[in-house]
Amino acid sequence: MDNPSEQWTIILNVLNAYYERNKDNAEVAAYAHQIQQLAQQCHAQREEAGGWAGEFTRALLLIAARDTAARQEHWDNPPDAWWRSSCELVLGSLCGTMQAGGEHFSEHLAPGFYQYIKTRLVKVGRSGSPDGAYERIRADMIKIIEEHKKLIKLAVAPAAANVHEYGPSLVRSLIAFNIGGDATDLRKRTLDRIRLELAEEGLITRSQGVQLLSLFSTVGFGGF
Image (cartoon, rainbow, N blue to C red):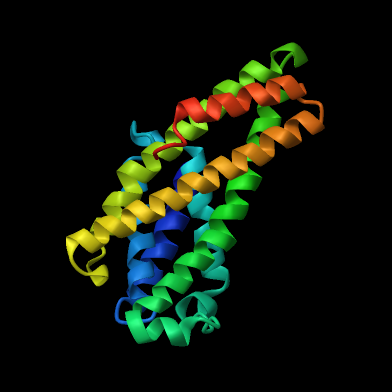
């Protein structure tokens, strides 16, 4: 199923329901609220309605929504990580949200970034003349980077600002900043890995792969 409207419906239905189930669950309430707010912010700015949130954003949220639906018990009550007891002495119930957020990063975002971007760039590279593969891949990388920067600035930050469970607005701003920094680092690592693989697979030359590395630093890895 690749109908954007149907995919957004899944995303919103699953993540709204997830928050409603857990809004009084101190362990994951803040995480559930943030991912619900993130989905709503992105849907409001979806490409189909003239906004910036395109297939890349939708694909990442869909991965999270489908896994949340498939493993409801896990996401409602994540088994305690080894570090939870020490964390809870300082941060209390927010440690559950930290664990859920960390798992979201490692189980949804990291594989989703890689799988989606690699598939998309390989398809773009093979969509025309081999001589033009590099320019097509370069142009599409820029699109992905720019959309991701907007995702962080226009959806991640506002979503965190709406999560009252995090406490005062300053704390929420710091959380949004840290999440944005982690996501930016993930984007850099993922694109770096993929540019090497594209060169190894012969879709671009090794020298072109080096040129893409230069592109990353000019498009915005230093900030969001």
